[in-house]
Length: 89
Image (cartoon, rainbow, N blue to C red; front, side):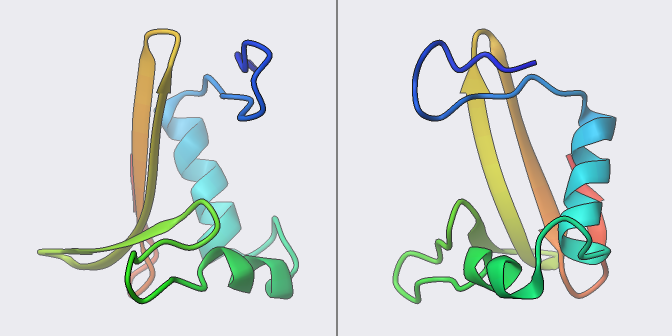
């Protein structure tokens, strides 16, 4: 469901399982975007560790790509670990 409230961000209300499936399809299976656009998402700025809507974070389990958000009483965050393909929501 889109709850963008008329703003440009167009928030999405989603289940954790559906989010995990989408992130796996996007990053692990690479079937959502063409390779050149996916590369733009994860072209991280060295100072901020931020790409186009994706942040690189160092965790105790290794490098993770992540994003979070909240709207209308909902909040969520995913972590994708590129070295293993694991998605955590």
